[in-house]
Image 1 (tube, one colour):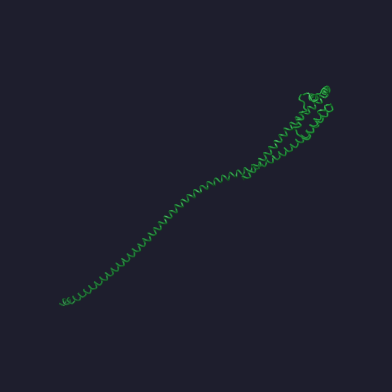
Image 2 (cartoon, rainbow, N blue to C red):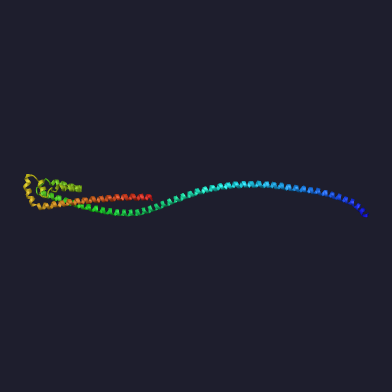
Length: 286
């Protein structure tokens, strides 16, 4: 009974305890729900924040990707431009090297030409010195030839005068004035051609020393005297004629030699002028 009573007493207590526990349980459930709601809210908030952050990150990554793409495009274009510019520069470098090689060859060629020009100039200077020496020799030779010609002229004039004197002494006075005029002409003109012509006038047309004398004095009054004179003076006239012929030949030789020396002098002058022109041209080229 006691147990029953006690049990009966305990039942309300337990019921109240159960009710209390039920209330507490409800409170706990409500708190749990609130906490769950808060947790869910926090989770949602975190999720929303993460979503926002993710969106921001995606946007940032998109912007970065776009920037990287644009930068890559720019870098790629710049790389292509640099490559093209490099190719252009390489082509220009090859062309420059080609031109430099050509200029080097041209410079070497010009250097060789300058060296050849210097050597040629030295040779030309030596040639000019040699030509000057030869011209001096030729001038000296011409001077000597002129002196020899003057001596020959004096001898020819002396022979003319002697011939005229002999002709005058032997009665042939018609020829003497003419010969004297010829001698004066030779003396004043001093031409070798005049001497030659005068000697040809006096020289006999045949080998006989008396034929010229007989032709020149062909009058009847002088025939007998001419025959006697031709016999008496044959040897003397032959020597004179031979001397005159030798003089004429000597004059001809001297004329030829003089013409040759003059031609040499003219050739030397022309060569010297050509050498001077060539030297001037080489100097202008260098």
